[in-house]
Length: 188
Length: 206
Image 1 (cartoon, one colour):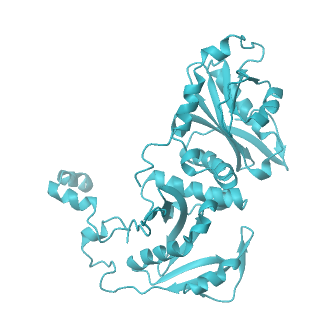
Image 2 (spheres, chains in turn brown, yellow):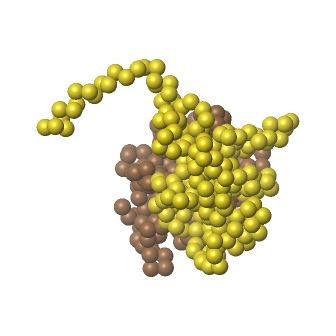
C-alpha cells in the first residue's frame, strides 16, 4: 500500500486507493476542506459528476486523511486532477507521493501518458517534476487560464514529440469538465 | 413545514430547508462540514466524522439549489441534540442561521420532543440566549479547540398532534419532515395485501 517511505512528526505517510465507501468519503472530505473551505469553490463545481468514474488515491499521515488525487482514465492517457493536501500537512511532498502513486498505477495498467491541467504560475514546478507543456498557446482565454501538461509514465520511454498534441482530443474533455454539472442537482 | 421556501420574491435567493433523505444529500452535508470544520477550522477528520453520523438525522439548507448549510440532530430519550451546525462562508451574510435553527426546533417539536439541547461555542452564547435557549448549568467544557456551554430550549409540543403509539400507523411511516403529507407507503396500499410471505411461517416453526 505504500510507495515512498515518508514520515511527518513520527507518523508514517502512506497512500492507498479508495476501495470502500468510507475511503471515498475521506478523499471527498479532503477536497471539500481545500477547495470549498479554503478556495470557496461551489459544491456543484467541486463535485462535478466525474467522481464515480474515477480512481481516488488517498494519502494518510498516520490514520489521518491528509491528501488526495483523482485519476480519470481515457483511452490514450490518464488524467490526474483534484490534487489536494490539507493545509497543515503541506510542505512534505505529499502531492509528489500521490502523483507517483498515480504514475505507478497508470504503469500497471499499461498506460503510457499522464495528463494534467495546471495554473500558468505552477508550470515551472510541474516542469521540474518531469512534465512538459502540451502546446505553448494551448490555454484558453480569460482569467482562469489553464495549461495542459503531460509526462511519460515510464521516464525511460519519453513521449515522441509528435505524439502528444495530436493524439489527444483535450479541449473537448476540458469543455466537458466545465459544463459537467452533475445531473439532478437542479431538482432539489 | 417541509421544503420551506422562505423567500421567493423578485430576484432574492430561494432558500430551501429539508431533511437529508438521499445519499447525495448526505454527501453534500458531509462535504459542507469538511469545508468548514476541516478546511476553515482545521479540525482533524476523525474528530469531525466521529461515528455518530449514522445514528442521526441531517438537515440541509440550499440557496438557489446550491448546498449552503447543514445541521445534525441526534435523538436522545428526553431531548433532541442539535449539533454540527455550519453555514458555508459565502452564505454567512444571508441571515440563514436563525431561520435554520428555528426550522430544526420546529422539526423536533413536531416529532414530539419537548426539549432542544445544544453545545454552543462561547462566542455564540448571546445569540442562543436571544433565541430562547438557556444555559443548563455553569459548566464550561472544551473539545476540538473550542469552549462550549450546554444550552436547552423548551419546545411547545402539541399533545394532540405529536406522534405516539396511538397515532395512525401510516402517519408514522411517512418521511419525518413531511408527517402531514401522505408518504410513498400509503400509495403502496393500492396494491392490497397479498401477503406474499405467508407460507414462510413453517421455516420459523422448524
